[in-house]
Length: 269
Image: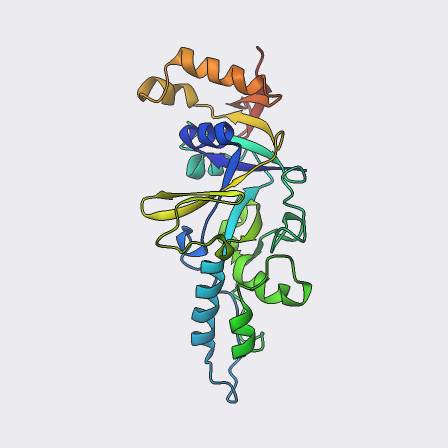
């Protein structure tokens, strides 16, 4: 099973060079509604109100777990515009089984249950409010927990239907066991190398050899090469050739003549 990540060229170079992919805290995503879809019912017997419970759950889920956002579709024009550096970037294809993103023991949410649910109305007043014991248990689980999944699904997998074009699939891993905190995390911890970008931590998970299987080059990628000092055209061509020699399929993206769709063409060497 191949799932895809839209990236800048610089990000893709780093990902392939280090054979790694980044996980992020919920609070660092670009949608302010992330992690707010619990829909807790009022309960006069609980010391927690729905609002307090929602905020507490968000904080505990966000700080204890990292999220990898992938998609099923490497030829989505909007995705290229929003996440692929306006068609000047790259999409990488990851074999999620080779990456062990299907493992129920290594992932809190493995990819096979990580498909995002898009709704036009937000869940409301339909979930029993969490108790203090359940709240404090958030962050303790490394592996998939079927009896805990409904709450985890509300935290990580509900989004507005406005985002449906992304066809997003998520993988969620526990990160609070890495011996680091949000504000101090940096360096290598097990399978993660933690870097900081604009003050925010990015948890770069080491991928097994062969997990990155495809690369799609944006239609305007050569404009990026000519307008930046990142690489010369010759250096870029040499880089792409080195990816090909790692058994990565390389595709060029272009516009179809008689539709609004993108098409791919395998790059020859």
